[in-house]
Length: 515
Image (tube, rainbow, N blue to C red):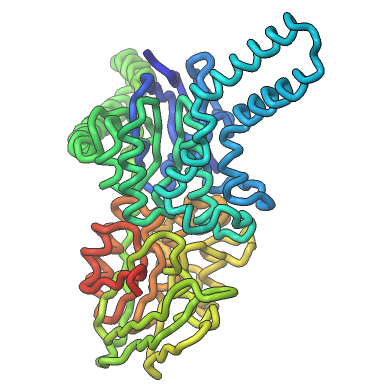
């Protein structure tokens, strides 16, 4: 039975048709991945089906009474609440029922009529049965099981949400959504702020649920494990494929070849018809046939030109520094108000490629920021080579809070570059044509990552410190980044939750939980 029916869906964003006349259905209980290149319209699609954004045309129809939950990482939450208060809000109806029951018991002491007392007791007992069946009296254990699985317990249940980072808040929103157990979960990049062990926990959890979920993710290993269907936004259309991500890729590549061949043949036919019409429309003897061809051409359902894929060509200039002491960390203490970890000892040579691994929230980003001089150490010391030239990509992007475009942002950092040069540099990062002048806040997450990587590509370095650089990048861009980092001759310090990516790039591992 279909839980979601989409008919004739069309939507244009910023003058660009994202999809047109699309028909898609999702059956109850299906586990669906949503894929597409950066900027294809994945988040727009999920915003439309969640009701946050109206479509231009078409119908989005959910099964009656269907309860939906949406993980939107850009949504704001009440920052005055504690972690536990926020998670308990997932069961606000049950807490209200419990309060009603307790009030009923409190009022019974004033009731003298035995029949009325029996009636009140019966009503209270029914509420008690519902609460027991719903697991109300084990709620804290349930909350802590999910919070522990996603690494939230380490944040502290009494911690005020306002003190958490954006990534930590995203994890908190995911935990609450899982606890709410809606009929349908709409998940936008749920693994972006999870480390490896918590991704594994989420994978097991999603495989165990019988309800429907639709998930946007660029983590192909994750999609392979949790999805039985793939919805792909490609060539301005929305198509549904049976099977996991690997199966989808094989089908999609075959379909793309067939589409390109059909488009090529149709263009050849159109050209032949246009040539015939141009040659014969002016001659009385053949004008009728020319007009007939013209009507046929006008009625022809023309295929859209296959989408142009803007592949990134990442490369990072390196001035090789042959040294055994690029970076030395000696009993370093990191943190904000107090040390987060035991003393850290770390050594990086001129060609070391180091993967920093550890649970989310343990302090990986804090360590990188400390080494970059953005946070003062709480004790110990670290020494940088005097000729070290560092390049840095932070996890939470800050573009200065201005609604500038990619060209303006790059120009501020490199003011000597001419507009033609700016476009050329951005083009290599896959930011082309109108993407160069679109406000940065309107770019997709993957496109914003490309802008930051483009800035890094203009700087000669001998060490790169990269904090989750693959977040939001599509598969093709991720492959290009992997290739560029493997070819980089300098040192790399990489924080990443993607095991496959990190193991391909790095030759050493520093497990921060054992620091």
